[in-house]
Amino acid sequence: MRITDEALNEAIDGKRELGEIGLRAALKELRELRRGKLWTGDSKADSALILLDRIDVSNEDFDRIEQVKEIIRGIVNSK
Image 1 (cartoon, rainbow, N blue to C red):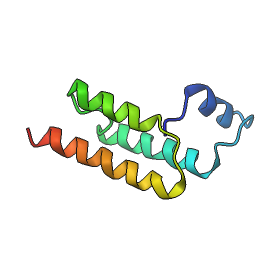
Image 2: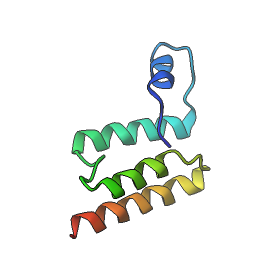
Image 3: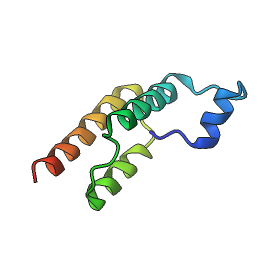
């Protein structure tokens, strides 16, 4: 799940609640940006990561999506 800039700004201003999943996603994205992990440098892999971020999932599936993203990054890094 990816948090839109608008939703994040509204949450910062106290106008919107992100909820547990939204907050987890925003914090994870920030951590990945800091680690330089958000993009792979491979356009097809980056597109797949973007598509995975746009899927609305339950709490149980959130971790599975993150595992799939790590697999994609691992495949790109092993090339």
